[in-house]
Amino acid sequence: MQGGGSTIRMEHVSKSFGDLQVLQDFSYTFREGEFVCICGPSGIGKTTILQMIAGLQQPDTGRVECASPNLGYVFQEPRLIPWCSVLENIEIGLHQIMPEAKSERQRIAAEMARRVGLDGFQDYYPAQLSGGMKQRVSLARAFAVEPDILLLDEPFSSLNVELRDAMCSYLQQLLALKPCTSVMVTHMLEDAVRLADRLIYLENRPCRIALEYHLDRPSADRDMPYTYQQMQAIIELLNLNRC
Ligand code: ADP
Ligand code: MG
Image 1 (cartoon, rainbow, N blue to C red):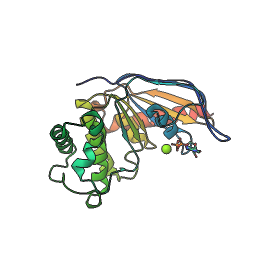
Image 2 (image 1 turned 120 degrees about the horizontal axis):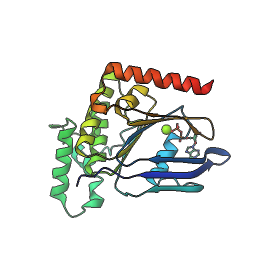
Image 3 (image 1 turned 90 degrees about the vertical axis):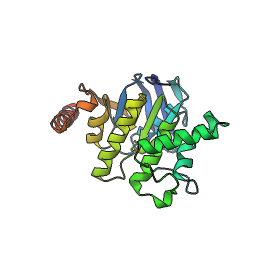
Image 4 (image 1 turned 120 degrees about the vertical axis):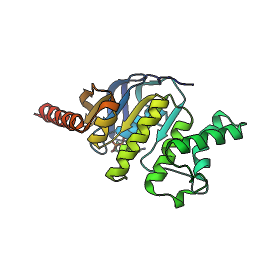
């Protein structure tokens, strides 16, 4: 079933780990069907925000409203099960959704493997794959469940420039087939400007949104000059805000 994703609302959220206050009265709405990138320095609270959306962390106060339980999560490391093949790894999330339908699970996993260019590698094990291939399995696994919400935590940061570029293309193709509300943490401004509808830049502790930036051109129509012009505009705005 195709859908546009669902809205995620964080309202007046506070979160501390011991004495460390990461979020204080933090509010933000991730609009249905939009691709939002969260940027900002290490340790600011980006992963904490994703984990709260996924329900893996609970706010101390405030609320995180996320209507859909159908969620895909792509982590910085591929997190594949070493003794499972490519197909079995892609299938993992489907066990809960369709426990009895083994052949349907396998059909979906094979189709997802094909979409991320892993035809012919279905029976390989993670140890036999390159870093980029492992991350493609991770992407295929996230999309196999037809997520309404897609969370990506620095998914391409361990990859070189060419591989990051290829991964961005795979992600765009998968989203064109299955649109969803997407939230991606990245420290690569270039990836954010290529993929995002909207970008938020976090600063300070507890963290606050230093900049929210809307990218007006559809991501498929963004060329290099546009990308670099937008990156420059964002950097200038951030510097202005700091003055
Ligand atoms: P980011 O993803 O922006 O690098 P995180 O959200 O992972 O940052 O972490 C924000 C801060 O909260 C960091 O200082 C980190 O050490 C701390 N933190 C995150 N998760 C935990 C946890 N489970 N227990 C204790 N401290 C944590
Ligand atoms: Mg993080």
